[in-house]
Length: 282
Image 1 (cartoon, rainbow, N blue to C red):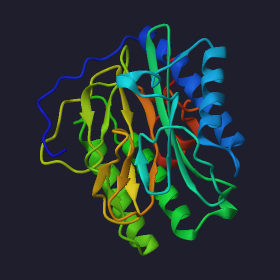
Image 2: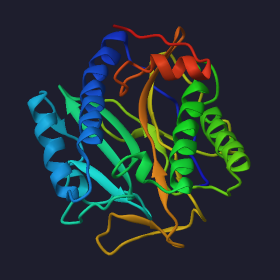
Image 3: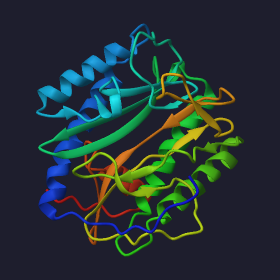
């Protein structure tokens, strides 16, 4: 997506952000459970069932289930699948690169996050897949660190791109940043304005306001970022069959700093690593 209309960001109140944290924490706990549970021989549907049970037992409702007809609680995207993979009968194999996207709504407020991992653990992964996962995660936190009240929103995408480029030079690879799918505002709906690109734009975008809540979600490929949607009308795959990784967090920005709503610790450890201010509202 190369064009973004002029948008104004509407910030949330402290109480609203705290309510979003409830949903975000449930998403974080669900992803933590799935990461600990995934193993070779599982089907993606088994993971999906585990996620739905955990979200509902935690007082939430899956955001994705039924969304425009989507038939899963989570998105399970494997290897060359970038995003929106539908859980089903696919059996996960050792060494598969799996991205899990998860959303939950609690009392009308949404959380949305994604992780990428190797089925069977990092020791089962190809070196290039591990580099890709790490580069994508690092780009997520670079984008989060660039989110500042009073600054242009599209600084986020510029930081993501710079980090991916730096990782490519370090790893000796040419990574592709997926341009057709971007981050978004989040709150009383899962997808809200503004759009949040994962790459540098000519435009500066809207100014980040007090209480801004957005989902930042870089998707990065080992080859060209060109992609297509499969016949299921959901699953997005790379055209060249190169593998892809996806990381996402829902983040709140205040004049005091940042709170990663979908991180178990609120982002304290990762924000410290990237030198960004941690400002929880709890």
